[in-house]
Length: 332
Image (tube, rainbow, N blue to C red; front, side, top):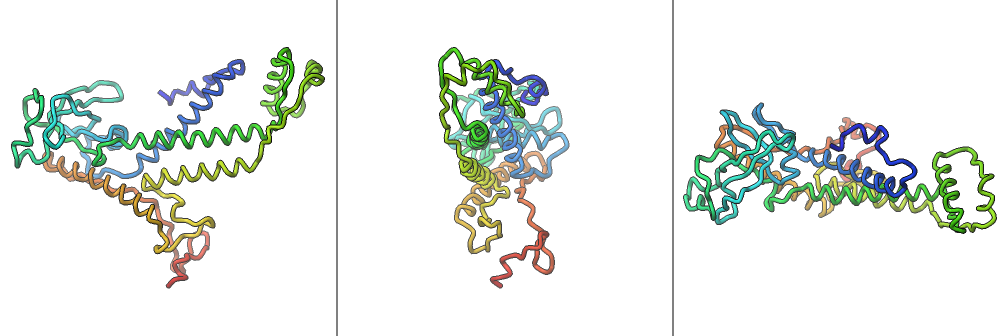
């Protein structure tokens, strides 16, 4: 598990393994970013009306990671776990007749569940599956996250890679701003130079270099042309990726803010914002459609709602908490 505290207590490679350390830093930055964005993606919507035997956390994780979740009856209770359609067949619309449902935490539950098929109670033809070999009464309903039945986790992975790369670029740029020169010289001094760089990593006030007298006489300094403006440029790219991801999640971002941080009036909202909201609305509609089908068979009242960012509370005078006047007042 990536939560193992050992990775923080001496888990990082030692100084002698520079290549392993670089890989560890890259992997660790991606891991930190990925976990953070997964947590953000899990906040896109909430499921209400779940029975006590169903974990909302597992439902949200299943929809994010697999693009679906299976509600099923077992030993007189309703449960929900990740599931994948089995090879027992699909009807003419591609709806599966059964799914393997399993516990991802400990493998304690792994069972094939026969599914209710939408429309099959009105048209028996929709129960006809290619290669169907499972008999029995349906006990489960599969709820899809979107019409394409494609998991959002791939979007999380893509933006995690881009954002983590920006952070590592900032880190490397910061490193070279501190050490704007390269040393070149005979191979015999390579280890001495590496030791010198390692000492600089510790940020000492002074470095004793008597043993490096040969380096002083036979090496050449090359300027890396490190530029602090690169930090500003990469930061702008990083903010773009962060905001774009939150737009895709339907969460708060700077997409509706100008560069000064002022709220834009409704007429200035971009088509992109409206498009992103429409995509999330369609996803929520698809989830609700599946929940309605499950409600029908299990006698429940489950529903999905979008988790919108908390809007800034406005005082009666039209000023926000920072005392800045809302620009919408100017167009009244």
